[in-house]
Length: 571
Length: 40
Ligand code: HEM
Ligand SMILES: [Cu+2]
Image (tube, each protein chain N blue to C red):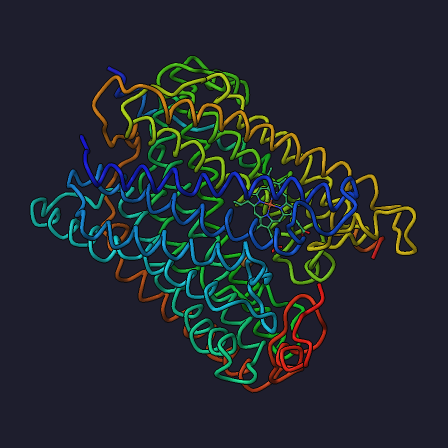
């Protein structure tokens, strides 16, 4: 489908803009591994404080980059699947909100006024521009869903009364319904707690309630990241290997199960939290194991689709067919395969480390250790990032009407990332057995043999994780060469929005799997049941009922430091 | 012409992969459990 003018600019910039920030985000990741290993022995480097850098790293990589690419991909996929153009007016509003919000939050973080990490837990409090920026980014990301995709779907439905809900559009709708549901609790947290405290309208807020509202948003957030990658695995990946999607109903079932189970699980981030009862934590733990189910369905469906492709290519045996997949192919669009397969291999480890996190008893041992860091660099930093890097390069080439440049580097990039992140993950996990903490610039203390705090058992693993991180960054540099080459290459054909789309092998229509309503109803009921009492408890119990605002520099409430005669806060 | 071949496609390899994955998961989970019990 051809595309031009403002719409083409919007889609292109929704890819290029977050990449400019991602370069900073990844650079900061490299600094973090070096600072954690003591290769850089200082908690501040190049004028950036450790927690300022970590806030930028988490927020840019996990919130800004993901949200932009999800919106760009969904815009393009809905447009392509329904064969209907998007509305430039709606898209501009969305674009301005997202870019404006990001710039506001970036201002707060870059000036050191928001060293609160991407989870922005109170009582740490950021400058108001950070919170308003986040809200604008999120609101902007929802605008196309309500004002472009839903109207387009209704118009499409009128023209195709008997046509089946296209699988990728169903996936996008599940993703954004989920996103809309979870934006509500986090908006309440920001608008009624954090922002008023930041602006000085209230003296203190309830941090337990804030954390409960945050994880109401924060866990399903990971499915907001993951679902677009699953959509690609179902609709694009099989085509790349010359096969078919093994089962269309299985794919739909997995997507719809995510709608049901991915929200009422947030307490699995709060197992160690006083003030919430153990019974409700256990209930959320059970539901967390339920939400592993659609991921298991996906693992099987994707493997079967790959096998179908491999058999067409002459693959034999029970396991030997794996060798027939186009791991290093640079033909046509096949280079994209490397991103998915490398991401999937990393995700294999993301799955099991996540199951350990979710296990109530094991969680108590790994909580807040480097284990968690290892885990999410194989999930959001693994499959999600690689799928998004791949699809961004793919869409950018199509939108510019060029061939992907430096394909050799583009194919090497995901494998370097895979090797680097595997080493990083293993090192972080083993270090965690010895209690190596996360969110700590350990190089200046625990990893320094001259320090009285020195922990020799962390030394090797911290260095190994630095090596892994460096290899992953090399992969990113390889990617960047190809990305920039493609961005500045001379156009040779019409700009288009286009994806390689797989047919389904088993394609039996199941009406229940094309109808969102019953699943949404169950989802809302389950959320209401699972969260009513924990929220009530959060409002009435807790170790500290209320807390004033703090920043990351002094263990004294902000109010007090601001009223001191010498208003200068020592750093 | 591929029609009959395709409808007969049975994902034996995917089943094998899936079982192998479950075993791997069980082993890693139990190993983690053991290590935690011993060390912490
Ligand atoms: C080569 C690239 C990367 C390296 C070397 C790297 C390294 C690190 C390290 C060492 C930490 C832990 C810092 C600490 O706990 O003290 C961290 C945290 C984190 N990283 Fe990365 N990272 C990379 C890429 C990514 C990507 C691509 C994403 C997501 C898309 C990501 C998301 C996060 C998040 C969400 C945190 C948690 C921040 C927090 O605790 O507040 N990282 N990273
Ligand atoms: Cu979670």
